[in-house]
Image (tube, rainbow, N blue to C red; front, side):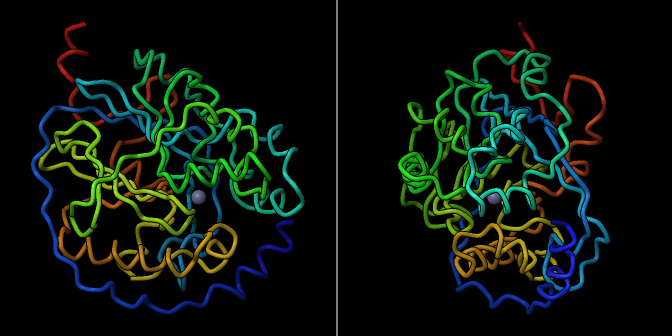
Length: 324
Ligand SMILES: [Zn+2]
């Protein structure tokens, strides 16, 4: 399979800069209202050529991939953002059709398992997260859904509709086991039509500006991005798979043509969302843009993933956690 993919990569790697996003008002984020802690669980990963990750000639010679879960600890409860790759992924893929298996083999299926999400949550003392928030339902984001059996799964209404369609007739865009696991507990994110940063709608999870979700549809029908405001000085936005390497923002390019072809449901809409990220970065250069699979970016934010059960964390444990 790899013999096929690398020549294709060379053929498909040419790219042009993105057209600018249309002008948009910018609403500065309010200062976060509560101390939060955010921890990175590196559930799996791999290393591929940098040109796999972004269009054109990449600065990065390799793309070090993480399939990450983030654990967000807030006084009002714990939130898990994405859940990484399933420890059962290689068994779960057997339900896919030919095309689904092909895409899986080139993308999420190449992950080597690393940290256990279950063990990491136990090491952090997280017993019952308030929700699992999914940037989207691809296999390397929804992989831990069965590990959190009674936890509501928050996703955009458009993504919920995608899962319901997959339950009726699997296209291979997600693993059927994940669709079944979340079937009875999907909760559509209640976006409000009020601007946040350069977006037209948002959902403030805790109502205090610490965790704010915005719609960024295109990579999948209901992909979202999540602003995480740890402190006024430490703010980042998890952008799912809009881009794969941070350099896409500085270089004003999207993902590689190969990854767009393999993984974007609506590539031109995704490119428009990447242009909005470029615009966001121009307006708020202190905001750290975190692509879901850019491992060096996670290391820059969190430090090394380490070898122990306790994952690396940033921020301050909420008082309710430190008092217990
Ligand atoms: Zn994806």
